[in-house]
Structures are given as structure tokens and as C-alpha cells.
Length: 478
Image (cartoon, rainbow, N blue to C red; front, side):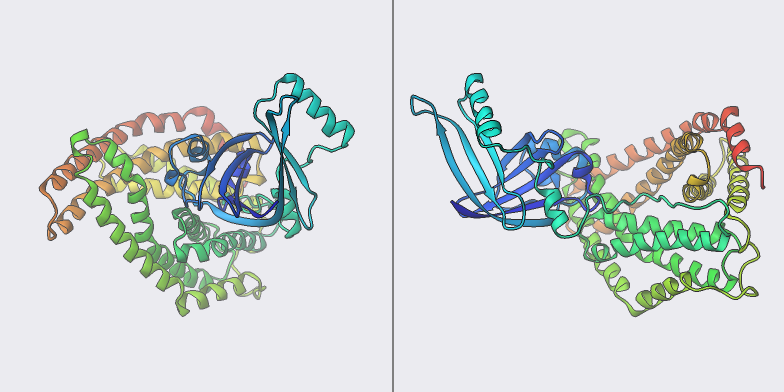
């Protein structure tokens, strides 16, 4: 018998739970270990003795546990969800020859149903059948309805799994007035910001800032594109505020991305240069730390907190008719049709004008227009048939990914060159600059490759079938 604590871990957005896995960190007086359990079958997927839980999947030692964690977790940090203190009772089950064939463990909880688990060691099929008969018929034990204790522990705390998702999914009534619908959209985005705010300030993992910035960007698009639903003075004031917010969080996100891509950067270099690029990682890490500190200062400032609270208050109050925008009382379906159709036509027109000699800025501007279209479709997706919206959104996403790749490779190429100049003032080894030159050439080649992919991807997106669906869904009220 011994006292133990079972702690459950997952990412903030429940990636392990969504992948039907439960991560248990079991701490007892004599040892501590991790169990990764399949939620559907209750089978043990991996186990490992650990004194503490690493923050990220990449930090685990090579083995089954790390293999099972990397894919679902990606770059998200493992965070503690809840704990269950309990008493553990263990006993060995022996056969006629006094050989251990299994170990039985009883977990006794104060407020939850006790649990019995069996670890087989040298049991054969006959032993297993006999043990099963004892458990089910003699002892009348029932299989656990929830195959891990996580659901029970969460229920005890009044919580539910999967209670956070960064996906934008807003339920709108087609007949809802445009001002009420726009406020509902902005409230949803504000909630995403609020939920991610504290960990964005602390810098728990890069995805908190990512989700925060997506909500900021969507809010900016909403203010710019859901036209004339709020008073003009409000739109002007908060367009400036959210633009500022995008700027003050931009450098940290940029450094996060470079650090996340570092292993990719290293992998594209010749093997003999792999170690030489290491000073770049140290340089980026220092810039990220400084940027994170400045971001935290801005998000802890009176300006930020006062302005965001005022924005929340705006979304909860009714404006006098004379102050409201001219589309305030329009039904949201009609306004959504107008806005999506107009931005779609502009997007196609801008893309059609791009040729061999178009400047990079032209493609960057096209990406901005495409993102506006994507976010509008995201805001209003439940107003339209699901299958058609999925098809159009997927096609648009594929095309935008080519534009985004082109922009990313160009920006990274320019910045790696800039970093090289900044590092030149330090005692940086010459081979580091050689490695960085090779990297910038690789990025340049990828940039041109993405540029060449533009025409085929645009042709795929601009096919007659897609255009017909856009026209059918959105032209009616335009």
C-alpha cells in the first residue's frame, strides 16, 4: 500500500484527447512513471519511468512514448489538467508452481469509483480465462464505463473535455440583423483572445500567440469587411487599436516561426554544415526572448487592458439608430452575400492581372485579399450549404498556401541576410555565415518554385465549376 497522485496532462486544445489518448503521470513514494492509454480500448500504448513531465513531445527520449506524442501534439506544450490523489494496493497472483502470472492493482479514490487493473506477466490463455471468470463472475466487477479516470476527475471539477477549440465556428441566423451578427462574430473572436491572453504573455508555447493573433487578424478583417454595421467612429478607433495589436505581437511570432523552422533549416544544409548553423539558433532565441519581454510589457499595459475592456463594452451595448451604420438592420445573409461576392470578384480580378513581370508586392497584396475572402467565408459558413462551403474553402486554402509560401520564403530570405549582418559584429565563426548563405540560396530557390506554381494553382481555383458555385451561393443579394 502506498499514497500516490495521478496527474493528467494534455495540450491546451486537447490534442491528445481528440486523438483518443490519455496521458497519466503517476507519482508514488517509490517511483514515478507515465502511462499513455488508448481511450477507446483502455490498452496501454506506452509507459516510461520519468521524474517529471517534459514540456514538449520533442523533449521526450526516443521510444514508443515519444512516437505516440509527436504527431498529435506537434508544437503544443503539455499542461497539467487535474490531479487525483489515491491509495494504491498491489498484489501478485501466483500459479500452482508459485510463479507470478499477473499483478493486480487497486486504485482507491476518496470521491470516485475505485479501479482495478491487471498486468499480465507469464499468464497463458487458460490463466487469463480463469482470472477473467473470477473478476466478472465471482467478484462481479464491472468494466469501467470511462476507460480512464480522466473523465471522472474532470466531472468532479465541473469541467468537460475538449472545452476549447481555436476553430472559428459561429452560429448565425440568416434573418439576424447585421449589427447583432457582427457583434456576435466580434464577441467570439474576443473570447479566443481572452482565453489565450495569459499564456501569450507568459509565452507557454508558440500556439497561444498564434491563436491570439489569428483572432486579432480576423477582427481587423471583420471591421474592414462587414461594412457599415457599427458606428463609423467605433470602427475607426478599433481598426487602429487592432492594427497596433497586430504590430506589437508580430516580432515575437516571427521569431517563434524561425525557431520552429530551425530543424528544417538545418536539414536542408549539407551534413558538414549542420553544426555550423547552431549560432543562428542561439541568436534567434535571444531575439525571441527580447521580443517576448516587450510583448508581455505591451499586453500588461494600461492602454491595452483599458482599450480591450472598452471594446468588450461596445459589443454589449445598443447604439442609437442615428449612430449605427446604414447596414445595421439589414439581414446578415444578404450582407454576407454582398461582401463575399464582391471580395471574390476582386480576388479573381487581381489574380488575373498577375504576370511574369509582376512585382512580389502584387502577390503579397493578392494574399491579403484572399485572406479577407477566406475569413468572410469562415465567419458566415453556417449560412450556406456545408458541402459546397467545404469544397470552396478547401480550394481557396490550397491556392492561398502557394501565395503564403512565396511570401514566407521571400521574407525569410531577406531576414536571414539581415540576421547575418547583425551577427557579423559578434565573434561568429566564418562557417556559420557559409551555412547561412547556403540557407538563403535554398530559400530563394523555394521562393521561385512557389512563384512558378502560382499559375497552375490559380487555374485550378478559377475553374468554371468553382466559379459556378460561388455565383450560385453569393450573387443573389449582391
